[in-house]
Length: 345
Ligand SMILES: C[S@@+](CC[C@H](N)C(=O)[O-])C[C@H]1O[C@@H](n2cnc3c(N)ncnc32)[C@H](O)[C@@H]1O
Image (cartoon, protein in one colour):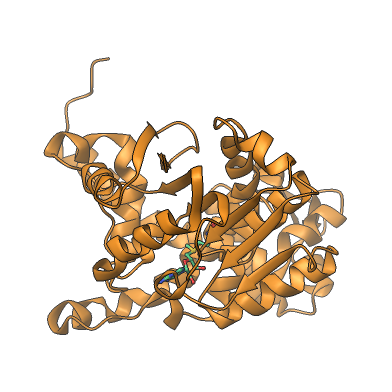
């Protein structure tokens, strides 16, 4: 496909587009948090700014400003009525910005993460870190909601692995390292009513909220969450399957090998580790490859957290060094992630 030549004007438009995107993300985030989208839905998709303000007892003038800004970035449309202007969703935006839709949840996570940026210049000078765990509950809660959308994909990927369906159906054990809000634990426990499930999670907020989620679903007897990091887990020949989803790059770099060894130790012979994470680009060619865009951005917004997103060669080398044989390495198993299936013989 031929590409249009870049001109100074087209490059300027690109820059302005990114800057508009910053505003758009916050307009969407604020709209979701204040309930404007749901209020619009409750009024059959059309409302005046005054009606939206009344619905949630919000300032009418600020609400009118938000409505116009939402039109400007293309998520709402305005129509002049006899008395007032009314607002409705632009095409498809109702569905895309539904309460649990990925795009709305992503805007909440991004807005939450963007609070780190003012500290970047100083952190780049001093090397100061603010870890995943140093973030606030708003960020953890939205992480959990996004994780719920990903969990069915992890279950589906695991089911396709050789022997997993049989082992878990026959009462086997699955462990999830860095189990976060517990969505993967719930998915496996509900899909395999006879299996045992163990979550390993060091963050007290997630330990508490995932135990609560499990209790609400009546799964507390069969699923336990250990309040410990991968560094502290100590299991021998226990698990048929270990999952590690969006966690490897969160592990302290100096502990990655030791934690993989503990995973190897925790698996029964013939068991597998399903490691799903981002992979850093290995070359200039990869940097231009869209499949690496999310991993590059993830390393960017976690650059002050002390996290290192490894390349696929580095991950493969660490898996082999710790005794695994890698039977699959797949960029399509879980979209936008790289998945590794590492087996214990
Ligand atoms: C991005 S979240 C992913 C959570 C979950 N796996 C999911 O898919 O939603 C990263 C998780 O890794 C956990 N984590 C961080 N350091 C860890 C460590 N040393 N050992 C185990 N888990 C860790 C965090 O507490 C958090 O729950």
